[in-house]
Image 1 (cartoon, rainbow, N blue to C red):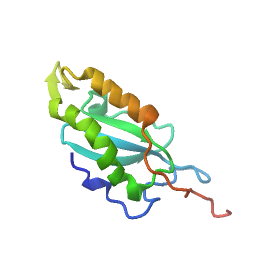
Image 2: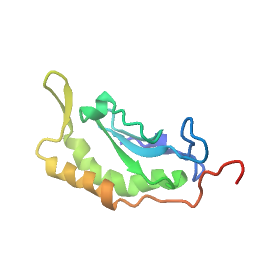
Image 3: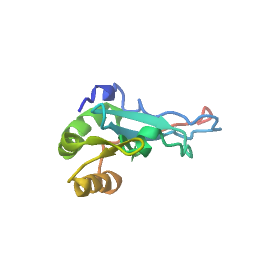
Image 4: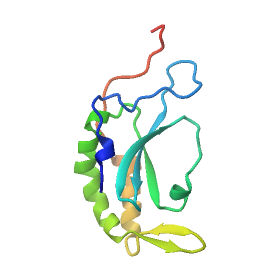
Amino acid sequence: MDITALNYEHPTDLLEQASGSRGPVPRDIYLVIDWVNEEIHAETKDPGDSAITEARWNGLEDAYTLPQGVDASKLREWVKQEVIPRIQPLADVFEIRYNDRPVGAFPGHEDEKGDFDMWMMTRADPPTHNGGLWSVED
């Protein structure tokens, strides 16, 4: 898995203000696994933006919510140490199946994929920082 896109210099590099917000409202932060291209990157979205890309809808990539205080400067190493060992067996068996459209599949490893999804949603512990967004008045 290529994680070069996770090269951040500062802990708060992923902390961004939501579009149109009046005050310090941060954007949501996601860790994205692109199964097709074998890449992992981070992205931010405005809170409440429920749009799902076609690739995610069809299981060609997954996006997992990260804490607002995720330390971007340590994220790459955490992914290398904690995430890649868990997903490499899944990446090795990932395939695209066609049923009117391309759909991602993990044949014979559906339970392991479910376990990984559950780990990311409930037990994953990415590094965090104490920074935040403040208004000009603060």
